[in-house]
Image 1 (cartoon, rainbow, N blue to C red):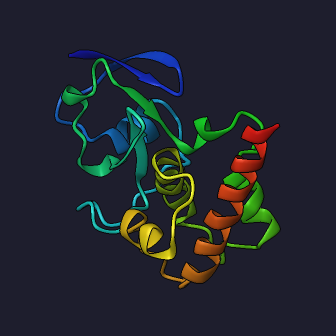
Image 2: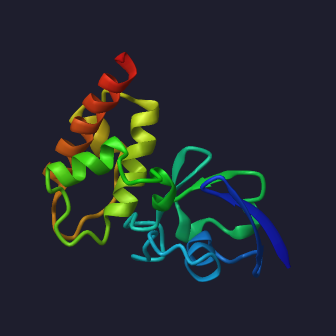
Length: 156
């Protein structure tokens, strides 16, 4: 069965079982490996993408539910890797091993769209991704730095 989905602004026709989780559609059918497999039960957040701008665990999003929505993956966050979150991540040396960071960035990006000036409590509530290295303090700092950069961009 074929399903048409839009990922990072590109329309794709995917021939897969309708119950196939988006995570595996992205990785196995579309060759987009930035979205990671972590737990498979929507707990860790390594597979976080955005569906219509909302952070979502792709391991639990079946293909059949995705026609007509806009999916954004880490590959679509920025064409050249200079999204303020990505810049802050590099400047502040946020990741340690980095495995979870694509999902964290996607959750953080969704947060900043809805809340351009989040508090630490806002970040903790919205970015529930698990980082096995424990870089939570640097993640918060990176989100705050990106929020400031986004604010400055909009003032220009």
